[in-house]
Length: 598
Image (cartoon, rainbow, N blue to C red; front, top):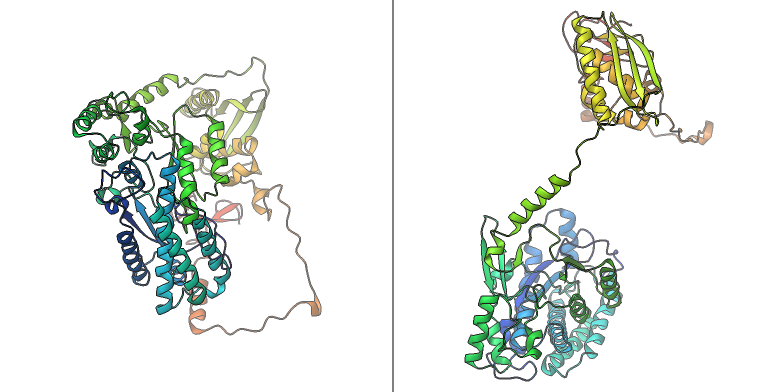
């Protein structure tokens, strides 16, 4: 079904999933309100009498032509998208209010009759759109990529025509016949002159524009509920009542008294279920996506399968599933969608989100007991179930590591107690003389660090937070792995990182030993073998003479400093300027002083 397969494959869709075509392309969408083409012959109880086939075809032709004109006059996000779109001229004509149309005809959404009507309308819409596209190609020429994709384009059109021949014309004979005629003429003319557009139709969701088009239902969807409440962005709710119910009742033969009684029941109970004035055999006509009279989720899939053979693109539609749906149910739904040849499927399990745009129920449920209260209850429950941190003490007898260090003129010892798995669980730091301020501060810090480790704080979090702190004493160390430290805390956590963090974690934190900094690759990473060639095997590069602009750029780069001062570089003890790293030391670029090595 890909009309431009010789140019490229289909790798993705738009977020709503109705547009599936070449990469870096766009589709100009438009939708028709189907209910506006249904006449007022409510007493006609047979078939789809009253649908204005001629008016529908005229609307398809006018809107499709307007869409085609806009392709060349539109602006696109990128030049690549603009080039592809102008070369293939994809259009996406569709419709809305199908659910209301079927209800007005007295046909259940999940019925063979309802699917036959939807398929016949879709077939006529796409067939007449391609007929219009072929007529425009006769005057304007086919789309730029037509000749390269002539075979797949004409093959897809023929597949559409063959699907139209298989339609059951018992329910909507006039629509089916008009559709078959449109497909015959479209294919015949396309064989001779091509088509102006590589795609003609999709079924978009029409969520917002459906309200502006005065639709009771959006896209190919049935009604969500006979009475629903829409949450507004600025706060508050808006009640939306299905206005097609009276028309459907009259179509089904109910008089004015019975119709008024049913409407009063719906207004009070928000549903038709339980209404004594509605016959049981008519309940399916008023079935909705959600509520206590729901359409089975397979009914959504079957409706999509009925119209998919007559669409250039895909269908943006929600397959509503009940809250108690199982994994097996979801799996079977996707398998059935695959069997029916659907290009895209989207499911929604009821109440799977704290707040949803449309809700079913009375207005009080959307305020006092609505999503806000639900969110508060969920938050309260989650907070109640959150476990308090538990301290995991070290065993009475445990292994430990002790290492001696010197930072500038400050000497000290660090002892790290370990859990059975080798993770650090406690830290003791001894610096200066017992009773001094420095010793007391470091003891308090070590106790705090030990408690954090025992309560589950990752060592990496401590390392990330405390490395780079700058205060005296700072400078050279006697550690061959870490030659410079900006403070005792900086050295302590970098040493712990070297001992207990993986090389990958240390590389992310930019904590490398002296040997690792001088090693060309990271530890454990082998250098790739590079083929060496000598003598005549080495191709000679032709000499190039730089232009004036390139020469000026080279001079500016040569004058610029080769390295930039590190964010945690120490300040020069002589002039106070930030120093730059030179190997394992730091050097001042102003006065030439070093941090202790030359």
